[in-house]
Length: 412
Ligand SMILES: *Cc1c(COP(=O)(O)O)cnc(C)c1O
Image 1 (cartoon, rainbow, N blue to C red):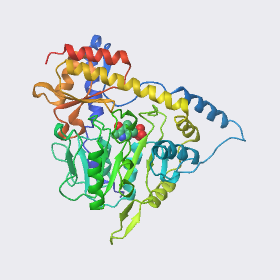
Image 2 (cartoon, helix red, strand yellow):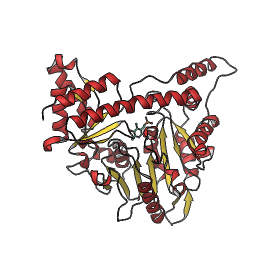
Image 3 (spheres, rainbow, N blue to C red):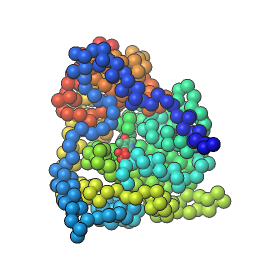
Image 4 (cartoon, helix red, strand yellow):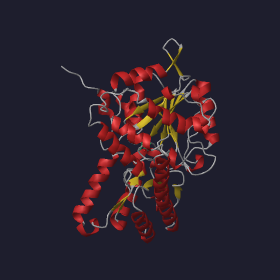
């Protein structure tokens, strides 16, 4: 008899996006005319094509694969040295931050890395997760058995939920009690909030005092526009001793379908053995990646490298400008519609309070039926997301303008 991993049975079956898909399909089947006007501002996926510098690098790398002299087979599991160098130099050293090339680990996505990182952390950790949150952090902890069962609100036993509310700017403050591992995402999906220097300083101080590890997801770093906001956790003194940072090319370079990301594990970051001995995590992650992962394709790594060329940087800046321009259109439109609006300044997401005490799903159904726009119900991101919905700015400008207009016509 083969046993399955019982933890998977604890996962909430009605996952958010399939349920959205089901309701949208039912609506479109019943209303074929309205279906033609449907605008999707739900799932967080980019819409614009890859930058020209990336396309050129892809073509060149494909041609290299066509001849024996330049063909590439397996590369280093952790990524090619030239890409690790480009990242460490451009994203960290040029900004005055300490970073060695071999502290950068190239991967095929931050989502995978967020889950895989649990391989090198122990099973007895108290885990703190923001609420609402990117569902991957919660579900990957459920899968490896770090939680008990979920209650009716979808909250799992044993996890420590950190509420994100208007009162704390949707960035959680360190808890009074002890936790060992902390997930932070800034700029945030789904709330669009970005952590200030003071907020991150408080977390680094807490982590150093408690010998905790911060898992810092900076997938939306490129969207930070307000001056003085930290772009990396390593801008905070002491963070190299307590934090792992996840970065991705998905949302800046438009690599959601191309797949490339990286994880930073500083060599000075320790965790503890069962007997309480401090050991660095860097060699564990290197061992994990070289054993369970065989690297990102050469072609894609060349494409990622092109994002750091002068043209690549300019083209990425244009993409970000486009999406943030949409965010501004949506933010202003929602405000004019009398809605209470958060986010959208340092992130491509607008987080909106549902009016008149509507639940997130009631707001979803109403906006779908009356405005023919698909948004994401906040309750799908955690119990504290109830009473909110997320509008994604990943769209064409024309669609963003049309959504802003339709929001203003909605009668609640
Ligand atoms: C989109 C996103 C990522 C990036 O995931 P990839 O696997 O690199 O595409 C990571 N974290 C959050 C919160 C995201 O929204």
